Structure formats: structure tokens, C-alpha cells
Image 1 (cartoon, rainbow, N blue to C red):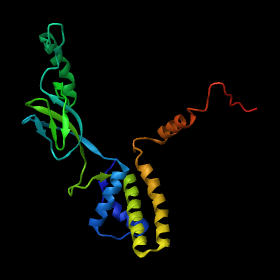
Image 2 (tube, rainbow, N blue to C red):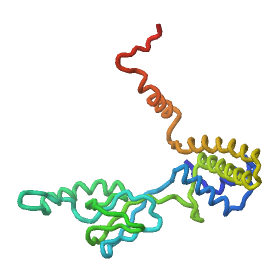
Image 3 (cartoon, rainbow, N blue to C red):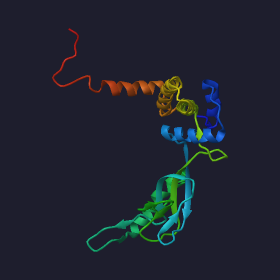
Image 4 (cartoon, rainbow, N blue to C red):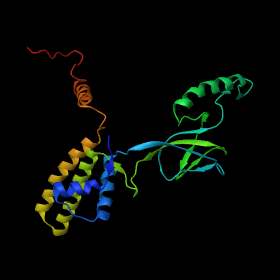
Length: 228
């Protein structure tokens, strides 16, 4: 799936709907449409840092946290005597961690640790060194705008045209222009729904999904749907 600059939606809006506006005004409306669609193309990233006063400052590119690890063997045991490290389990844990650590650069040996997200930081119960955070970063262009696919581009173009036309109708108090904006709004709703469906889902997949969605209640206990 090829991703493109979000500004390509402005060119499409001009081609399909005759929209003409400044890039700064377009970016504000386009980002609103992007948030409404809800798609965010991301990549996995890793970050290692030490806590200070039980807090770890996160990179500004963090969109969603996948996991947080500390470099300690997850070999705690519980018994009637007390909790502690099981020496035998430590060797086993290192052996288990060896294979996946070679398969994925984001697999971190160690123990998942509980945390609380506070603003742009993570709060822990106590200080740790070498905390490893796996997170999702939104794919951006050089100007800091999100990258989009072709379906999202069409949806954003329709939303920009709708917002621009509706605002023009309100400013001029022209009911005909407002009615035209509502026609364009129907395009936006259609393209938005299409953009929310992943491009990886084929038509055969959608057919199977619709079969399940529409047929789950075809048969009811004690009912017959035979043609008489």
C-alpha cells in the first residue's frame, strides 16, 4: 500500500469540486477529517531510558504504547515462605528469551512492568534503569503531516469540499449553496466509510463478513423458513 502526502487531497478537491483555498486553511480542515476517519498509519519503534523520581519521559513521537519492559528475569515465585527469585527458573527464562530476541528487533528480554501514563511521561512504583518501551509512531512527511492512502485522500477531499461549501453558504446566507454542501456531505460519508475499511481486506473477505452479519439470525429456534 503506497502512502502519500495529505496535501494531495487539496489537488483532488480542486479537480472534483472546484475547491480553491490556502494550504494553511486546508491543513486545518484536512487534519480534522483525518481524525474523523480514525486511520493512523504507524510503525513500531523502541526507546530505552532510565527513570528519574519514578518517571520516564517519552519521545514526542509516541502515539500508542505497545509494551513496557524492565531488564530483569521474570522468574519470581510465590510460596508459603515468601516471594523471591527462583534461581532455576532464571536459566530457563534466558533460554526461552533467546529465540524470539533473534526473530524481532523489538523483542526485549525481561519482565513486563506496570506503569501509569501521565501526560508525556510514564510513572512507575520505583526507579528502574534500562526501561524498554515499544510504541507506535504515526508516519509523517517532512513537514510533520500524516501520510494517507488513496481512499483516505478521496474522503478528505470530499470533507474539505463540504466544509468549504457549507461555510460559503452560511457566509452568504444562500440556501442553494447549503443544499449543495449537503450533497457533497453524502460523498464524504460514503468515502469515509470506505476509508475505514483496511485496504488489506479483499472483496471476498467483505463478502464473508457480510454473510455472517446478515445471516446470523436467519434461523431461529422453533421457526421454519421453508418456502411453502
